[in-house]
Image (cartoon, rainbow, N blue to C red):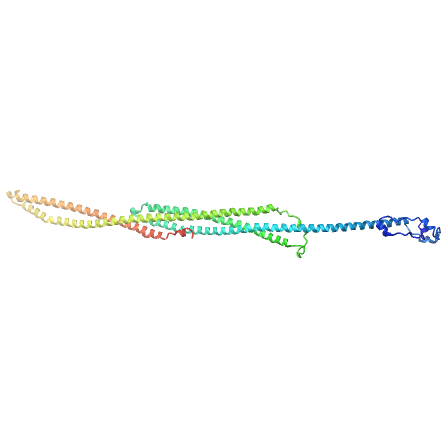
Length: 451
């Protein structure tokens, strides 16, 4: 019992040796130790009854102490291993962290180069498209000016046709001038339709160019912003003061695309821009060709109409000259005929007195008495004279009738010639003074080309 061993001497036990060796302490036999003690076998009895509160035996105490020491040794060894592993892990993680951070910085640099390359291509295409759109706007202005310029030739041609409707008589004819003017009107209408169609295509292409330019600008703006952010990320280091923790930033979002889709998006935009640029260039060449051909056609038709007018005016002038020449001759003939009629009238008048004399003689000789009323030579002579005078007067009157009829025909011819001359004068006035004068306002090649 514990009470009988209270005064037993404590065995010598070095805990450092135990800690180093890791063995349990030696167990000492209590009987051997008691023999040398003067109080061996002495019993405290009732004197120590109130102090008997111990619960464990010395073996349990030593066992417990040994367990604690062993546990301390194990914990210390484990702690030393953990410290060693921690140092190795720190060295390894520091190197890994530096390596991954360096690799991330390298990837950011490569990404910046990639973004810069695509951003530069986008900027070049934006500049090219803006320049192309500017040129196309110039083509649109030229088409608009050329379309407006066609109104003048159209007004001139329709005015010429309206003026020539005021011709009268035989000059109201479907001559070459009229045919060429109608061709000119139809040509102008077809050219206006072609210019309007080309203008609509140009306006639509300008809209497409601007839409594509806006798409490229948005892409460029996104890449510019991404470049700025990645450049800022690339400048971060472990000593940066503006970094902070964002635990949720490592989670990818649903809308995040991979690098191939990102590259394809820009490539598709550039291809679309290149396609619209090609279409715009082709449309500009088409517009240039349309303007050139329409201008040449209008000027050629203008020259044709002018030549037809010149030829027609020449024909009218020649015809008018011939008519005026014939009118002069007719007027001379009318004067001669009027004189002839006066001469014939005088001749008839001059024959009236001899006829009256002859008839008076014959009448008076009818009063001869009886046998004196004979057909003598004077009677026969008077009869012949009266008959001859009658035939002469009849011939003169017939000639006077013919002369008067001729004078009437001459007057009709004069009226017809004067009317035709007036018609030719009116036609010349319309063609030369009005139409040809108005055609001098025909637009030049420069104006018709849209400049």
